[in-house]
Image (tube, rainbow, N blue to C red; front, side, top):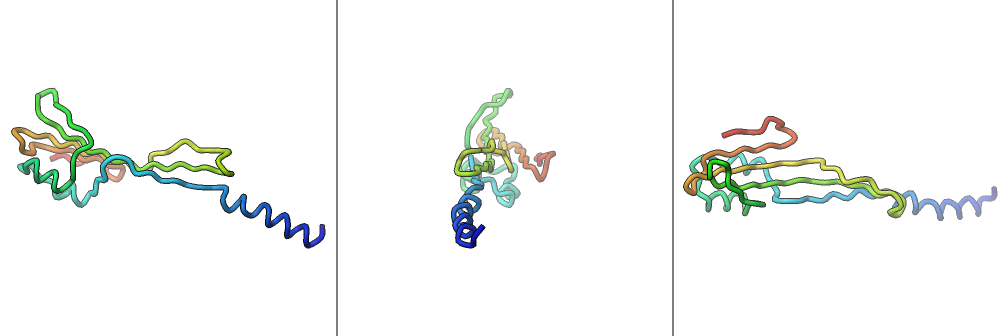
Length: 123
């Protein structure tokens, strides 16, 4: 094979290999910083929780009739190869959940769980 043909084939195939694999990360939900969660404590009022963590992703009522705020955060990653001809299903690579239970507008208890702490933190 002559040199010009080799260079031509390289110039045609190189962009395919350089742009053929793409990893995309997506953050979903409310970002939960463990350092901020560590500052959360029983006895805080709702305004303090909002100032510290922001608004919850959703609100619920427990079986005991107590108000619960749910904060969830997940980071997903998916891969696409060869100009979108093949795609891998999105994988959750990090998930964190914080449940804050209020009684009379004051934090009664909370639970934080993340992949680095599979047991969760109970207060």
